[in-house]
Image (cartoon, rainbow, N blue to C red; front, top):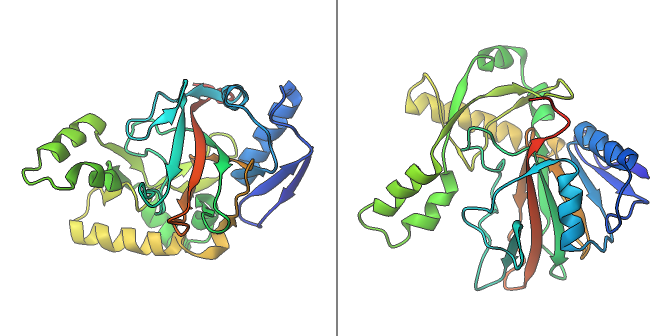
Length: 276
């Protein structure tokens, strides 16, 4: 197994491993260590069945329940099917960390490219540890004890279109709920500090006015958007990506329409290697 860093801040490509076959414990541990070190890891030219996709994901921890919004692969309710074209445009073309409106957001995701357009449809990842490291010391101190509210954010669009009374939006808020998370967190394995806000789901900094919250969030989101903390991955059919959802954000570029793009994703909610 060979591991090659893709940028100084985030990302590595792993070669000489076949995810379509059962892996040894040593291989699984090496992949996990690469994930913790590089935050997002990538494999090319993999012939991986849904069964092997599930087995690979289960080697890292407990899997998520079926997704509340997206449909699943036939016969595999833990595998989300993200199939998009002109008739079903994507809604993941914005920076986000998955499901931070939950009290316990997921640990990691594993995405397999089933069909990709001839060009376009790249995905970007950003390191929140690198973004935190680059903040001025006084800003780090300012943020150290702050918390922020996370809610369903952009998912409001799924319930508000053609809505006039707000009942569907209210019901959705009750269904998905909100969570309050520290703005700065510490990774449970690497020990690195990282920023934990995202434009998709973070709605308010606790303890300040709405105006002050917007100003601070805009500052941090602009800071996060620097390319020095990011990588851009161009998919091919059979490419596989795995990322540490605790300390990264991602953005699926929606520039390929009207062409078709189909991805399969499994979310791992709990890291079995971290004691509870």
